[in-house]
Length: 342
Image (cartoon, rainbow, N blue to C red; front, side):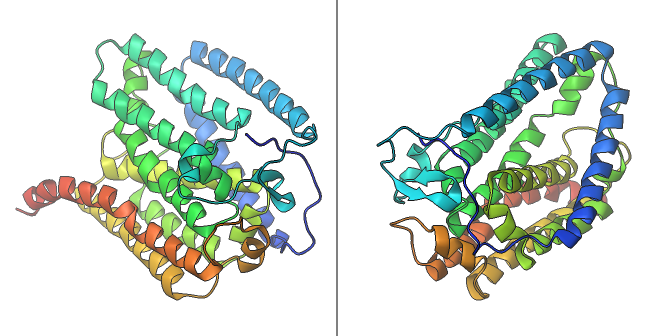
């Protein structure tokens, strides 16, 4: 297990275009305010106190993690491919390393442990609850943990194929499983409220625009190399796409209630847009120019494929990995769409 330690970023890393930072920051603040207001309206006072205590613990853990990150590794503890630009040692790449490698991150552990614990508490308060829902929820969290803490997370900043694998898990597979866990239905039953959260963020017309635009910005601007160049940019980027995936699959999966009526035809169009985005992204990575080549050539670990071959593999992952989950949703929708058509 490698420890992290702060260093100066190499001068060869291309900087993020900071002129767009106010746009991103404004959007993030607006979304945060909407979600916060929805939470304050829908959650009981006791739950707010519990959340405040959890946030206190999280802040303390982040402080502890920051202190530990300033501790240099002991002499002779390297043992891997020392990537100074990555701020941690990365072992030579093998396919098995995607499963066997693991890096402890207290911040990510807390971010995943809190919803897991909250779901267990909610299931106890709600009374009888389907085991399949609970299994889907915890499986989604487990996949997110693997993508962020396992070998995929370690290599995602150094190999485009690992980045694509992490991105597809956190944007499609994990959000779909979490949505099938019906967390809002569980919260409504456990805390005796019927609020469904902000309506704007679950409108299909909004998500139909947000989903492709977010991928276009990530892969069509310098956002991707910027997100790979540091721990915080990488984590924030993946959490943002995880949130987008949760909103999309909450609508498409149709398990939790929505603030307003949504026709199945609207859900089908949103699913079609999501599918088209991943097919287009895969084709772009398979046939298009090199992506983030400057950064990836700097940090590529021993044993990794060449940059072009690795990008082609990333294209195949982006195109093929989401298809089974999206196909299952399409099959689930087909009878309802046929009935509405009649």
